[in-house]
Amino acid sequence: MRFVDEYRSPDIARGLAAEIAELAGDGHHKIMEICGGHTHAIYRHGIPDYLPDNVELVHGPGCPVCVVPAGRIDDAIAIAFEPGVILTTFGDLMRVPGGQGSFLDANSRGADIRMVYSPLDALKVARRNPDRRVVFAAIGFETTAPATAATVLRAAAEGIDNFSVLSNHVLVGPAIQAILDAPGQDLDGFLGPGHVSTVIGASAYEFVARDHGKPLVVSGFEPLDVLQAIAWLLRQRQEGRAEVTNQYTRVVPWEGNRAALRAIDATMEPRATFEWRGLGEIPWSALALREEYAAFDAERHFTLPGRRVADHRACQCAEVLTGRLKPWQCAVFGTVCTPENPIGTCMVSSEGACAAYYHYGRLQLGRDAHAAPVPSP
Amino acid sequence: MCLGIPGRIVAIEDPEIGLATADVGGVRRKVSIQLLQEEPGGGPGIDDWVLIHVGFALAQIDEQEAAETFRRLEAIGDPYREELDELASSDIE
Ligand code: SF4
Image 1: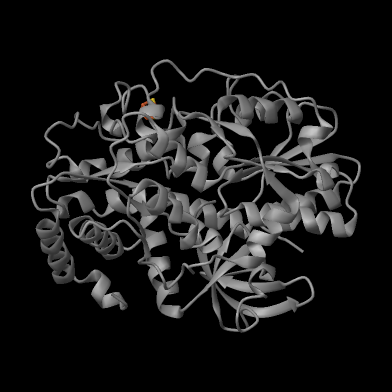
Image 2: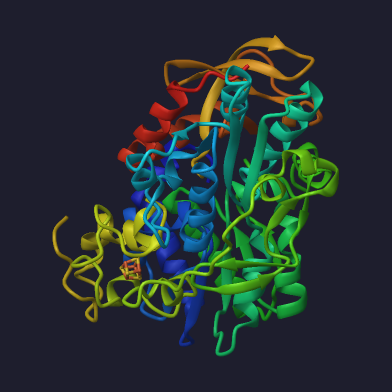
C-alpha cells in the first residue's frame, strides 16, 4: 500500500473489495466516518460501489464548521459591531448562517470582518492596527487549535494588547463519546479521522475500543486507504476483537504531536459544556482560553448575547450528523437547500456531508435504490 | 481550513521562533514549523516536505505522500483553490 501506482490500481481495489465482501459475511456492519476529508473521499471515489450491501457507511460530525451553533455566529457578529473592532476568521466561516445572517451579511451592514488564512495573519492585522481591537473567531478541531494556541503564546510574548480570540474550538473525542452514548446508537465501528490525528495521535481513540467495545481504524484519504481500513475493521469484527489500529502510519503517529498538544494545554482548557449544532450540549467538548490568558479572551472583553438559536425547522442536519439520515433523505436537499443557498451548515462547508453528496452524489445514484433524485447542480 | 496542504521547506527564516519559507504548489509563503521542532530529528530542514494547516506545519511527510496529497487536493477542485488563494494572501511574520 505504499506507491502511487498501487493506489491507482483497480486490481488492488477489486482485491480489497473481494476481501471485504468475504469478511462481511451475512451480518450487517454500520461504520461511521468522522472526518470531512473521508466523507469527501468516499463520495468522490464512489467507495460504496465497492462495498457489499451489508456494509453501510454513515457520516459523523467531522466538519467543525457544520457543528458551530447559529448562536455563536451571532455572538461573533455582535463583537464585530462593537466600536473599533476588526473581526478576523477563516474563509470557511464567512457564509455560515447565524440567527441574523452570516458574516458576509454583517459586512454589508457595515461590519469589518476579514478573512485570514492563519491566526498568525490575524495577529499581524492587530500589529498593523494598534488603534483597533482585533478579534480572531477561531474554529476547528485539534487540527487548528494548536495554531490558535501558538498564536496566543506569540501575542503574549510580544505583549500585543489589542488582540483576542473567540474560541469555538471543539474536541473530537467528546463528540465520538456523545455519539456512542446516544440512545439507539447501533454503530459497529469507526473510521478514525486523518489529519486531526497527527495532533492527538491514534492513541486518543483507545476509549472507543476499551469502554465501548467498538473497533476504530485511523485511515488515510486515498480510496485504497479507506477500503483497507474497512477491511481491517471487518476482520476485527470477524475475529471478535475491538481495537484501535492505525492504517495511516505514514502521517499519523500513535502518540500525536507533543509540542502541539502542549501549546493547546498551556493556553486552553475544556469547557464544562458547549453546544454543537445538531447534537446539542456536549460536556467537556470544546476549548476556552485559560484564566492566565484572559487578556486574550474575547469572551472576557465583550458581552456576548449568548442566545440559543433553534435550527431551521426544515433542516435535518442533526440526523445527518449522527448518521441516522443520509443527506438526500432530507426533504429540502438539493431543492430549497443547496450550496449556493444553504439552509443547514452541512451544506455550507464543502466538507459537510450534504455538500459532498450534492457534488458527487450522482456518481452513486445507480446504486441507492432508495435515493431521492438528485437535481443537477 | 481542514485541508492539510503539502509544502516543501525552501528556507529557514528564524529558527528561534520556527519561521520558515515553504513552496506550496509554486507559491512561496512563510509558515511556522515551531510545532515540529521537538520531533525526532529536530524538525524539518531545507527540502523536507510538511503538511501545513492554517500556517502551521503539523506533520513531516515524504515526497511520495506529498505528491499523493496534491493529486487528491486538485481533484477536490474549488475548495482547494480557495484554500490556496487564502494561503497566497497570507503574509505571516
Ligand atoms: S440538506 Fe440542507 S437542510 Fe437538509 S440536512 Fe442537509 S444542510 Fe440541513
